[in-house]
Length: 623
Image (cartoon, rainbow, N blue to C red; front, top):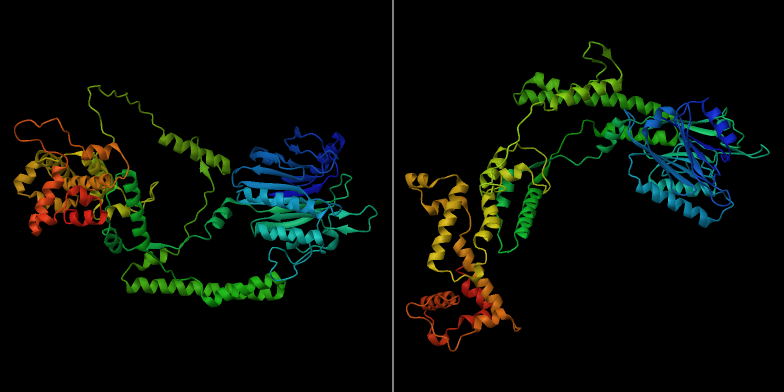
């Protein structure tokens, strides 16, 4: 990809645009960034030969204005062109074939006649727009009115070792390059002084290099040079840069800093997960979030990093580091000698590693042939494909179309299935059955991507009591809904126990007939399912609610009705119905009798409930 920058001085008239197009068609280019266009209205033109021209606006004084000229081969990749300010423009190119997405900024910096405030404002805006753009490849071209010379210290790795001279504007541009972690392209290549300058004074005595190329990915720039034959009457020369941008390079750079490989100790995970303590919480969503957080904590504690042996030795890595320092300092002779030593050291290290892998395979009793094949590079490139008519094509786009048509036809369904109408007989189909959940967990394969809750399949398969957690957090609150207000008769307790045992048998996949035939006790099923007892859960909820109500200090109806005793109404004959508070009276009396507490030292349950600690202490054995 060839990107150029050119200060046209003015493109306000049709004649200047025509001269620009005549000169542009004589050189090789893909993108030309244009500065100082001095147009008062936005201009967009598409020429007969296929080029597209975008020209931004300037201010009221006729200062500024940036634009872009896109060659025919990249017109289809244009996504948008924005004039962010009168001095900054941005062109975004979409991915097209092997060319990845690219963002190109065209800038025109204030000259030295402007104050420091205006210059600082320009660089602050440019840095803001640059950091807001998240494209992988970003290029900045334009007239910065700044001079950057060769590298002055080893710390200036963003500046190359070649250049003319420095000035104050160049120091500010260097600060911008350091803050954005980009690289200066002009100083990366050695050129003659006559082929470096981009601006000439009116009298021809002074020549400065004030147009610059800046990029964000190292080693993708292959050359930067001026084009002297590009003449449109401007006092600037066109600066051209050649980039090698590939999607493969983008992938390699993205995966360069990958997280270290890890493994999970499943025995440790199971033991830590078994320490789950279920709390009495009315909100089911909160219970589910607590369980998910517990699983994440268990997985993090059971995770260990896999230590891998380096392919290269420490001596080889030190040689590579010294070679980089020699390249940065410009000592080409030393760099050439170190490069030769690096090649020999890398070859020896890879040879020793292959021998060590084969020895390990032989000692472990593995197939040596398979170990040798593991060193093979299986990356092959598809060079040609055959059409249905038998013709062979080697065009990349034609091959992509053949592959797309093949798989589109393969996965498209050509079978007509009749629509099925669900009968409206009053039966409500449940959303998810417990058997479906159990089947999904048992049939899911390991080492698959987790869902939105970030729980891996291995965590579900190695959890000792997942069904118990699901029952306690979802079914149990629904089964004992509003149990705080129940009188909780013996009949109610038997009904709850029968329902829970039926659900328990369904969870374990055991029918009532199988339980009777194999003489399996209900206590054995409870030990296998590890779920909480619903009756005990209902009693605990009632105890907690009673203590909460009796500690009310305001005049609420809840507290008033609890203490209310009717005066003129008598209870009917026969055995009186059980009251809500009879559960506390009877249970506390039995407790007092078992502990041999004198009647003078016994408390009423309402008095005892006002003290939180005493209330919990008396009911602790029951909970």
